[in-house]
Image (cartoon, rainbow, N blue to C red; front, side, top):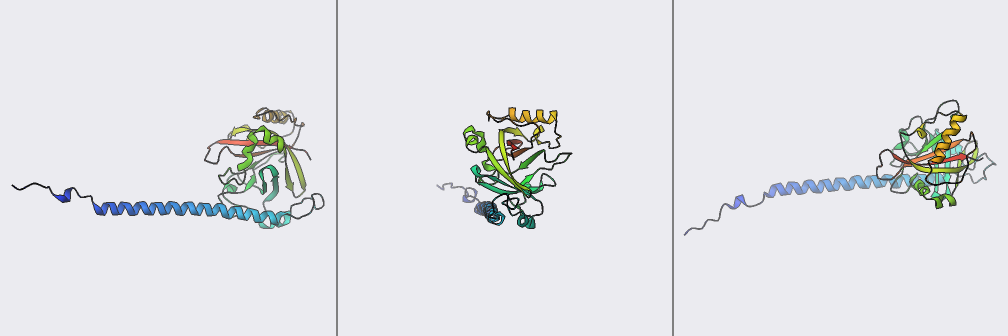
Length: 252
């Protein structure tokens, strides 16, 4: 009696289809690794560049003898938009700040004008009769820990107690700024509007910034004080509109 074994061609897997699928998966994996490697190279290049820039910026002279301890002539030769140099020792942060003509360019462009995943710290566009009265500095929150990533350490009152001030160096001289408030925000809030004029309305606005703090810093802000807001994303993993901000006023 003849047994029926069926047509083996119907039960064998389509070898060519599996081969094609395997090749596609391998190529996709290689592509992903390539993009990941390129991105990491971008971070490494940017970190190295900013470390070298710190050496370029230091004059070695005490603040006051040359107006600033930062060599702004050297920085402005690299980037004419150089406006300041921010130092926050508690965050191991020492970086240039440029004056933006818009609030997008420096998000993905380094101080040297080259594309960069770290971007550059920048003053938001400021206008009005008193552009220096209230300003915002923007910076990325990155998984590498660079730029403004460390700013969220100010969520803890203990960290504020250890590092309540920072230095903003400018071509006119080096300034000390006193932090008075730290809190979460969204980028649609009133605090991002920089067109301010000194007076009762301005002082009331500054009072709302102090009241929003996650904890009481115990710091009183003088009327009419120059205020600077440092702003970054709440997390390094794409936080949408969520921001973390630190507010400070100029002491001297």
